[in-house]
Amino acid sequence: MDNTRPPQNVGDYAELVEDDDPLVPKNQAPPHAPPPSSLLIIPVVSIAHRTGSYYTDFIVKDRALAIVVLSVDPTLLYILGEPTDPVEVWKTLSEQYQKKTWTNRLNLRRRLHSLKLKDGESVQSHIKEMTEIFNDLAIVGDTIVDDDPVVYLLASLPESYDVLVTALEANETFPGMKTVIESLTHEEKKLQDCTKPSSTDGGAMAA
Image (cartoon, rainbow, N blue to C red):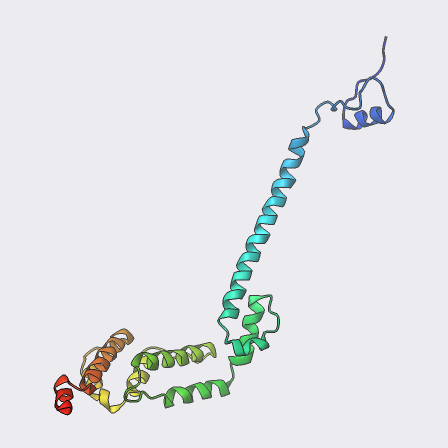
């Protein structure tokens, strides 16, 4: 009678293989052993997930870096060196140009108070420049709040816009920035039409 004990677990099976037991062929799978494919499912999925997440983060970071760098004036790119991290680039620019010091605030306030629209200049360009100063002040911790932007804008207009300013002052409610900009654009067009030579004047000059 054969008293050979059949393998009860993987460890027993390994011992039989090491001993070259003829009862257990080397190419036979041990009892209750999980199929090879199931052993690979979890690590493969995990690796694939980590790899996909890594490349997604890399692409997002790369795009953010490109956006920040492309927004910088080409003459100032030397300050950034060889940028690799958008956060570091932003910190560098912030430290270089937008330090929250009282001198920066003073200079920006001076620019704001001295900014005046001249006759014949573009209203849109004037508003854009003033808005940029508002934004710069906000960055250095000196935000222009409430109705102040409208007040600064109206105070920066030349005498040719006095009729418009007087009309806005007559309103019971304080005009919002959108209303003021629309009114300024309309008034600018009226002033431009008034300064254009008429066709009658042109014909008289030709005669």
